[in-house]
Image 1 (cartoon, rainbow, N blue to C red):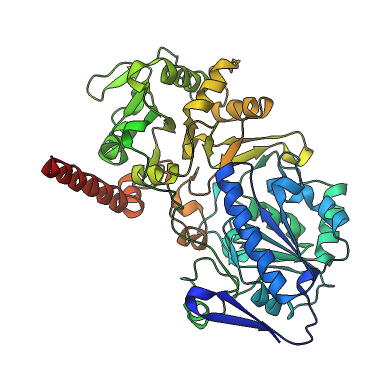
Image 2: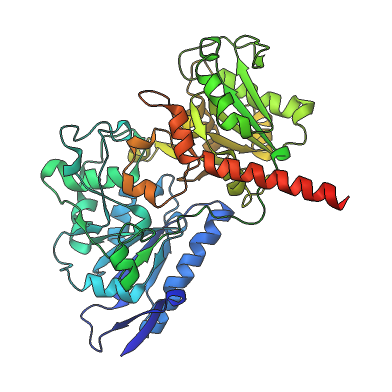
Length: 477
């Protein structure tokens, strides 16, 4: 009998039977990784953990792949587009297990779970999520009853059988999904597999967990075979407020509504905020950016903000530029903690990643603007030096930046803690196991309540900590 301690800090142990019907080498482990050095290190750590467990369980090695490295095509992160290649590469494997870069996997426990299922059947397994309301990010699918459609929590890991892999890969080759935008991969993968009711529904597997808090009986008893950290990954002290510039895109008609909310919520905790508008308003104050206001897109306004970040002497010491809409709701303290892991000397474009045109293999990634776009000074310099420009004022700024980034190999880095939409637009189970950094839009909600519920406590705690630190320093002096 082979024993393996899965979560050693909790004293949980798993074992495989002497003659298992399923071996670790029957499973391919695919980690949804990305190019950024920060995220690559996390994915490699997960890969090493899985490989180490496999060595303890079997004399044969298991296949553990970093998706962005194995399948280098742009947009491999949407998964569906690379299924034909995965099917060609691993035709004899029984199961395909997909996970995120920080998913913790108990390999022995996973094998135990998969033994319950028949790989020759077209099976789709994972931790089931459902929408709270008809969601704009899901194009209001199943609006008559959102609870009837389940999709997998990617952080908890999800599995398809060899039979389903072959079916899905064949269908993708014959009829790729007619979707231009890649927004929420977990929903889009499930929707394609469901195939208008002619395919497979997701089967909920209780042993697939996120942070475990939603399944306490499994967590306590040690039956979770996957987990995912809820906290923000930090790499030292938070980045200093002195190093970050916040740029809020606005216009005159929102000065007394949206901008007022910013000033009274997260803007109160940000040291360096500039409000770029179409008029100068000394009561805020705003900066007249000399760009005509448009209803959407705001490409010219955003590129002018990038230029001013480099030219403005007052921002010369700032390493980071955070560009947000006037109805973005965020946590300053959480963002500063997140940035502790990134190097402003590198070209960093960070936020919630969307994709365009990946189904046709001609697409590009972009950071969606509503959730906030974070740029290192190095990235801003590259964009300006290489001549980024808009053809019209109303061009979509985030997509233009994405196209330009692809042309000049400037990586787009995804962080799922940024959100383009409102809290209720996301599955509750998804939000429960993360520490969000931003949401977007004031429509049909109270933005003050959203800020108070999700962000105020951390921002206020960070402010108090900074005040105590300054007082302690004065006492020492």
